Image 1 (cartoon, rainbow, N blue to C red):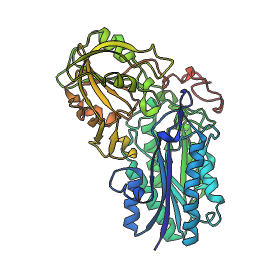
Image 2: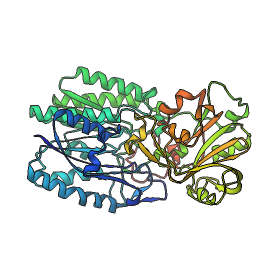
Image 3: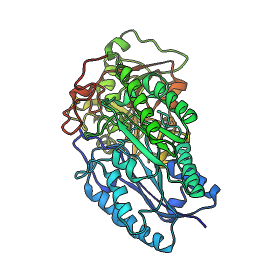
Image 4: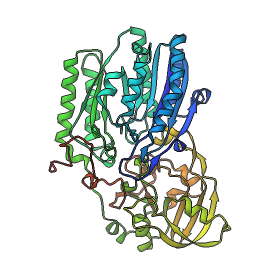
Length: 494
């Protein structure tokens, strides 16, 4: 029976926040618990389901998973490697046919710019692994490097942002691995890193330059002989590493010159459309000044500067302040604030308390807002995803926001959570007894990933300018290691 080793490490690292991400922040699945992820809609599920269809035996090592946050303590990476290496060594000794990796691709540690490339290098250095095919799946917001391309046989990234194709992308990568094992032909990967870096708000694939690039990529897969996959990698602008930003990868069994020409074609299109990756953002006061509730659904105030999915603290206060200033009735926001939740522990449901809310996680914010609130409800913050295509399914279908509380101040409902959770599933609200479609305005701490969940219930959506570490104005960030020159840091708008 064909035996495939499975491991993975998943983190999107924000280089411009103050926190250091330790191992306590990671969810770890190992051994049978890793195999038990089949059916949860994640990357791992996509691989396990496709591997089962191939009749393979999977040798599970471990996956380390964490949402976006600050620099990863390098000890996490070494702990991960120390855990998976002996499993790999034993699997090779027992007879191993291939290696599959579940990755994000934008992790940065306190010692490494490219831990994914380092992981591949260490795997290749294990005796017996040099000749094994390595395939895997990674996020559209990865930092694609030459090392990742050269040291693996076929890494496939998501095609959609919001990422509702995590499962399908893993299936595609698994099918490429099966093709390699069945034919004996090892494909090659070519990588091109462009002189462009777009903020997450500019990497949605439903419109703009990313949509155009994905369309060309699919055409190339159909028309260029030997091309198995074309990866359009939007990149992660908040990773201050050399190769951060827009990149392309081609996996091919065909002519290398044709593959390189295709990469240059994609790069030329991206450069022509580079300005389209810098989104327009609205003024909060102007949006709310004449607001009237719409029976068709809530208006969204999308706040990418505090994008939780991009590493924001989830407690910035500009949107909450604006809703209070304009006394908007029936509005709702989610604030990640464990201290505020703890301050309400002794308050009975229906009781009142004065609480300092938000403003604790970023030096760019104005600070906490002190409000007298009514405690509406409290919970343990656990719920199951409504949508297994949600972008956060990579963490599994069972979600834990930590101890949570719902409070109300005048017309504003505030869901306080102890843990940050990217707003990518409406179950977050419904689990707390709140029907999001009945709110008049919802503050959404996201860039693009919320759209699958929120757009269907919204009457209107405005991306607004606020303070926070995930700003769309990349010129505000103190880059030190990114390659130069790069757009938009060093070039005028097109």
